[in-house]
Length: 592
Image (cartoon, rainbow, N blue to C red; front, side):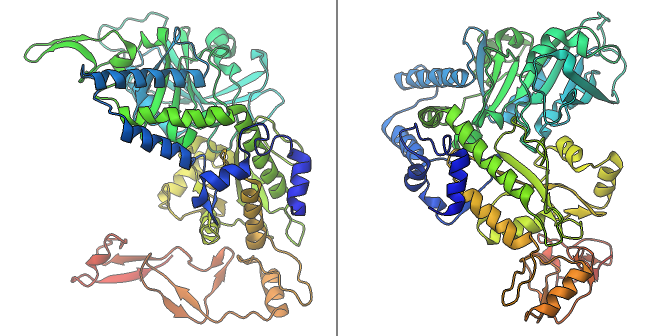
């Protein structure tokens, strides 16, 4: 055993690798994830991985069982209904939700579950939709339904007094709320809608922020539902019934909400984030009393007891699950989730949470300790974790940006591309969480609008604009992640981005060279390395051309990733439009 792992185990050994489970982490990796040989997979917040035994069980199930359409009345259909019923109970059990109080509605994913809430919620002109800044775009989309119905919408920052990195105490007096109201679209009430002074309001927050990994205290559920007037005093907040939605798509993989203690009205789940397979399936866990308030407009096959084609008549089903599951459920996928739950229950969620937490804590510590040769820090971490204080309420996510010795930033796309060359899979950008991204990166509204005007959109290569990062680098761990994965990632960061002193007879050049003039001249004068040529690729996936030299800027090669090809009419050449070249159009190269 190498000294690095020995030191790691001395600090974290009691909870690393499932010592009490039937199989330890090394056995799990060797038998269930042979396809990861040589590959470091660190995007479990995007999607975790399915195991070999899980998929073998699914295949055996589907090839030895006959599952009929659950809307039919045959024996095979009734058997399918039994499997679906058992699957609903497994979902409720995962969140410790009693079937007397909660129902499980299967959807095409967590996003569809959120959309269902937005569509069916009883909005009025006196309603409020309030949500934390740290929310996925799929939660922010609910805002469209609220605003279209004349309701108010507010993005808020929640911070415990004197504490950063999430809410942690069960006292409403310690909570600070800073509302950011959004302009109403419709001030007028709808026809026949009289002011009542009472409305249904919705508060949404993630159990775990998919950008930073910060875990929100579930005490928020009780605070909002039971003591909202104390926290949300005065205009623009109105008296009424506050209902709570938890986006647990990320958090359920390591710390699902306990609904017996924190009775949220809506909880959304994504199964591929739990155990990798199946994709395209999610669930909405809804409190039975809250479900009665939802207003369903559309009806479909399976959701009605009776309808007449040529007059305005429909009788809807009373069963909550059948009322909201449009069409035929994805019953083969639903039949498959029991094999994933069996795997999680064998290892146990509590053991998975401890294991993944140790790995993320180790990586945070290592990144914070990195220094360039001039003593400057290499890494900026986001989300309630600093060199002074380690926040305990963090999920298995580490999000950061890297700095050069002169204080300028490495672009996150540069990190991602070099990581890919080293067979390390991670994710970069804002992760569909614009509020958290802006909050942690310190981007103002004017910064965001300026970036958009400069052409920046999601998933592009514009990672640094006006000297500021537009996104970040995220690594995240799953139940099958190992110390070796974490160590290889840290070694990659050190070898690629950390500037170290030159020692006689040795060359310590990071793969990505800092561009301060002093550092550059010193390195070139003390090593035998010389730049021979540079290949320029102005068009993605097209052949490049070589040059012997190129001017530098404070961010690297001048005009790097700033090339465009455009026609005389201003049309921009993209990879999809590449076939237009040579078809009678004239193109010219343009750079700022």
